[in-house]
Image 1 (cartoon, rainbow, N blue to C red):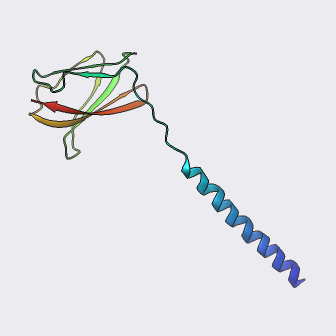
Image 2 (cartoon, helix red, strand yellow; image 1 turned 60 degrees about the horizontal axis):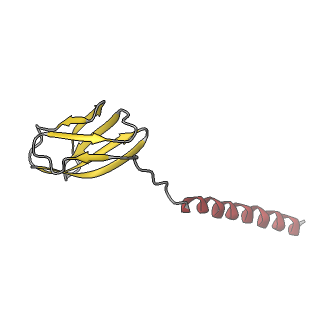
Image 3 (spheres, rainbow, N blue to C red; image 1 turned 135 degrees about the vertical axis):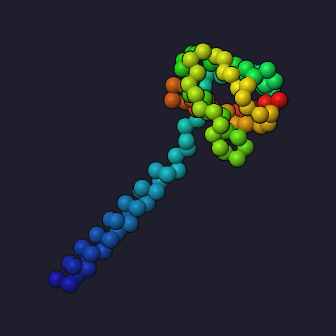
Length: 111
């Protein structure tokens, strides 16, 4: 009887340890990398206060602009291709564009 209890206990604990190894292998998958097709941001550097953002599909875009410290300065939805950034002070920014659940980030220089 003692042998049966030992065998059941050993099998039970061995089963749980193999489950742990199976779950850890799922973490090794590489992330999917997608880009916004035909993304173009111009002019960069910006000096006239107008930034143009175009893509191949030209859908509604969500645009966020961050300063170098990571603070969100601008958050808007863009229906056309022209974005007015005349209120930004000269400097370096990060622009994040999302279109059709795909996100792209770029460096933006304002003069």
